[in-house]
Length: 175
Image (cartoon, rainbow, N blue to C red; front, side, top):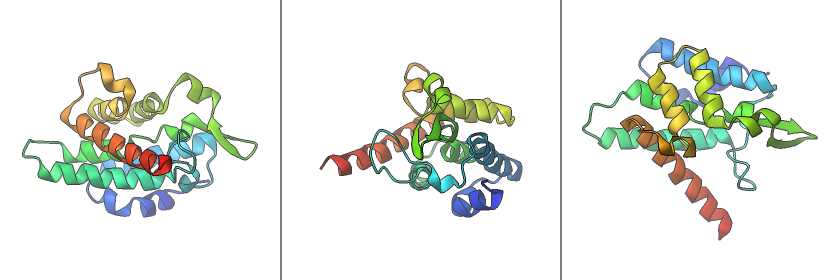
C-alpha cells in the first residue's frame, strides 16, 4: 500500500512549486487514490511507458518533465497559472496507475486501460477530487487525445515537455 509520505517524499521539491496548500494535498491524494485502485505497493514500481522496454520509472519521468515545465514557465512573460501548470504536470500520467495491471508478475495494459487510456483516467481522477476543469484539461490534453482540442497555454507546455522526455528516452533505446 502506497503512503502519502512516499508520494510527498518523491515529489518533495516539485510540490513546493504549488502555492495553494489544498491543491497540493489533492495532488498527493490523487496519486494515492490511483495507486490504491490497482494495489500498487510503491509508486516507484510503475514504469514510465510500456512502449519502450526498460523505460525507467514513471516517477522519474514525472519529475524530469515537471522540471522542464517549470523551466519553460519561468522563461515566459504570459500570465500562466503556475499552480495549475505544476499540478497538471505532476498528474499528467497518474492515470497510468489505473491503466496498467500486474498480471503474472508482469506489468501490462489492463482491461480498464484497454478501454480508457491514461489521459482520460487521469482527468477522471482529477474531477473525482474536485480539481478545476483547467487541470483536468491539462491531464487529458497532454497526449494524442488532446490533438483535436484547443489546448490552453499550460496544456501546450505539458504536452511538449512530455513528448520531449518520451522522444529522448525512445532515441536512447533505438541507438
